[in-house]
Length: 418
Image (tube, rainbow, N blue to C red):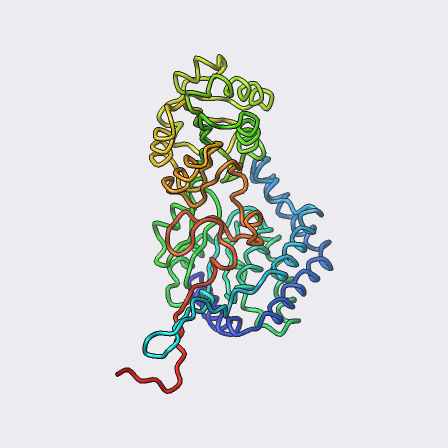
């Protein structure tokens, strides 16, 4: 069977399974998640064995240390997969929830019911634990899914797929509700993102190049974000201790994540007090500072930032810094250069904070908190399928509700329109 035929078959099976999983009650879906968790625990030795094959191949193919780290399934990461499944099982089921039910003058009741999206195609790189995150959220939200992991994790993903299949069967749900693509042929991605007849939504998780390609070529709606160019603005009325703690955490807690701060904006009124303190702490962490002319005059080891720096997601210990006149200049800079992911203001002025929340057009906007909180788990969504910077239909961290939609329902008792 060629790749096109193979992907068509996966699509047909997913559509059929999707109809079944959409009707499953919460107890059955939760049982499947717990059975999958048990299968992973029982087969952890096999998972580790298959993962070692991927790691060995990765080393032979020249994968860098960061990629190998993302690829590795340590005992702690396998246990985290198990715990993640249990956490999703414990979450409230959004499917079937009815909201906004009200009587109309005609006597009918009109409301909205939350329903699954249908079949979700997810394309991702490196990290095999994404296979479990994606499967768990899709199942809980009543969706079937087709998962296409990176070729570098093929053995790990197939071992995880076997555990998922076993858990679904033991819970009495169709094993084709979660299908992990078995071929490493890149043509499978092109087929998946054009399976309009069978797939309702595509979710890409990976580097900017992958997401740009899928966004350009997909004939199916895509939930995505391209960059995480996140800003923190330290206002002139900020508390110095809060500002230092937030700006340090937002940049240095983890570098290679989409919610790390990449540009720090500081009000001119407070820059002379807060910037030298921060510069010293960043130096201790080995962070390279690239700043505007005013920044460079206050921080001797800072290099002059270029226009390209304001557009760059470093994912590394590099930080752009700009001293601005006030909140007006800060908001203007953010709305020009931001990727609409996450922005934060540090201020004790409630009025300015409210204005920042209203005028900054990003998927997450924060007051006196690190951008690192832009995460499904921290938002109480459980796991997340990814972050969306789109405005339709999901925005921000995409959890269970983001994997559902709404339909109108009407309740009558023999009503006819006059």
